[in-house]
Image (cartoon, rainbow over the protein chains, first blue to last red):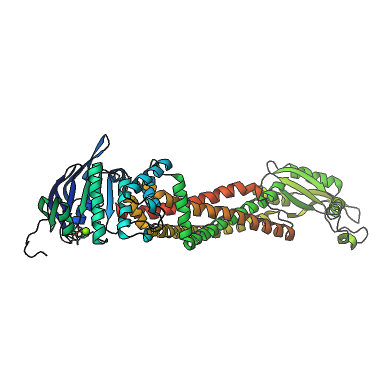
Length: 241
Length: 317
Ligand SMILES: Nc1ncnc2c1ncn2[C@@H]1O[C@H](COP(=O)(O)OP(=O)(O)O)[C@@H](O)[C@H]1O
Ligand SMILES: [Mg+2]
């Protein structure tokens, strides 16, 4: 479970990116976070990743991996604990952030090595992950030999590699053609349904959101203005195209 | 920091060294020159001390005696010198003839040196070889030697006898001047080289800090992904520390062998040109030299990389 309580984030330059945000996401939920550019969506993911800290308020995360349940209060996380907290999360970015000089296989194996898995575990897990994102035959390709959608699937496999219980995707389809975008979203929903992971997808693509009919949280000027299941909230439906 | 893999860190650090090879090479070269300055200083100091030791080890001075002294008088003088309590350990009288024989023996391979001497001629002088207790008492002894006197009965042409006081010691030579020169040389060498070494050490630290900062910078994207997937600071930092450590170690190994070659060349030239100097073998200080180089290399390398990474980690968290 993820809980934001009266969260305010004010950047050093005075910009208030989040203003009194209250949000609760249950284990195994799928949530779209939507809003215009500059609304504060990325700030919300950065706080959740503990890349930034709140100005006031509280964020707590209860992560369930197998039988183990761990509780994190992000405000009280000591620097040495941060890496272990981050292992509960899997992140996907708009720009993929793959290593161009590593093969698909190595890009995924890298994460497993970082968290100290043995060579044998790495080998086995990478195979499983490649199957999961349907890229087994591209294992030895380099990122620049793949399409955008394929690259994002590698990134998704990497996000799944560390046994994370929460997947956070910030505009995962921003650099991908529309057809492929549905593929990625389908994969994310499959991950939520099949493995019971909590999936948070930040996006501003209305058609995509409307198509999947999931929970949609709308942020505007740093505030949550709507939270519903189904299609995207619109202030002025008649003006929308 | 519990289970990062060693081989990962080593491979990453070697890749890093190669990726920034120009900077790495610069760091290593400056470190090598720093070490060579230290090594040269150490070797020079060692050799000067060694020569000082062998000079003072003899602890001998020569006191030349009046030519006219009789055997009895010589014996009187000898006793007076021996009586200088706490200053003199031993006295040996060397007659003119003994001195000549000794020199002939010493240079027996060069008979030409003595060929010009007329039969019966002897340019050497009778002397006392005095073994003193300590280099600090030389001046004391010199003064007292000047004070030694004997009473000599002289028979004049008219048959009258009179007693005159004779001061039979008229010249003293010791090694103090050579020793003093060597000591001054050693102190001068030490000051110049320590200053020079300190400058080079600071410069090499500075270059290493910047080399590692560039290495961190070029891997920034990779590091940010590592952070997202939960890499510990240790896992991220260790490759850079290794990178600095390798630079230090490579520098110390190269510096050691360069020092070895230079030292062997230099000592063989010096000993062949200036026979009065004896030199210390490289082997006698090789171990301490290797250890000092390794310590300097490790301090500069590890210290330098920690400085640059600490900055970087602070910026992020
Ligand atoms: N590091 C930062 N420093 C200052 N202002 C920032 C920073 N990051 C984002 N902002 C500002 O905060 C607001 C929200 O940004 P962001 O969370 O990136 O929005 P979104 O992802 O919804 O487009 C924007 O006005 C943006 O300019
Ligand atoms: Mg954004």
